[in-house]
Length: 263
Image (cartoon, rainbow, N blue to C red; front, side, top):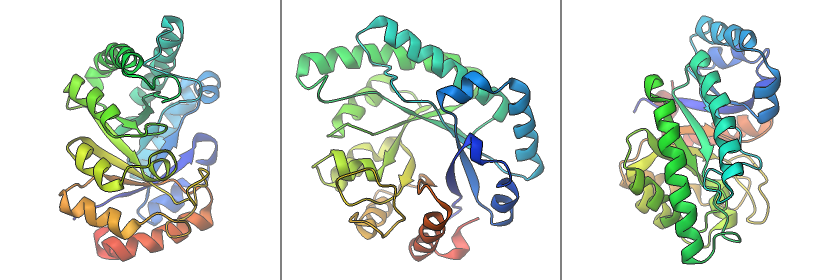
């Protein structure tokens, strides 16, 4: 199994880390929040792209998400969301990521009944059709991450409705442990055909702690077993937010995949 491991890193923390990543055969998932997209000139992204190339590092991007909703029934909010995504796509033209993670924007407290959920879905379909058209020449995979979705059918309906090879699913195992009462098995079985990436971090089931793998209550042995049973081979991205937790997570992954499989 040819398995690359990606490390989630905010743009501001990349300086001085690329050499370490290259030496250890790890790869960055670059988080580009809204203020970075507003403030960083294209020339800075061009320099970063050159540094990635020099270090022989591919990358992925985690796009902006705060206060954004591609399925908003407020057309102004939806258009602002797409404009922000457009900035992220412009960055992707320079950084040439393998894929980009974005949030779908569903919230059960806003769209909890079937009528509201259907309206969210129809608005979402328009937004992601636009996003795929905007990135057509890049061939960029867009992976939608679960956050507040409490059941997998919400994202499954969107992905089946689009039926697009470049619109995929990013399973955030930590978010599942907080926001969904349904077994992990149901999520993986429902969305395995779309699974392009997993975000790996742990928590105690109450807050989005972003602990190292094994420091919380998530059943990682069952998770990796379920991936094997579904013959799912997604990108693995560690989302533990300090170096010590990243190191602990890497050690844990060696127990599931073996050192020889990571490159």
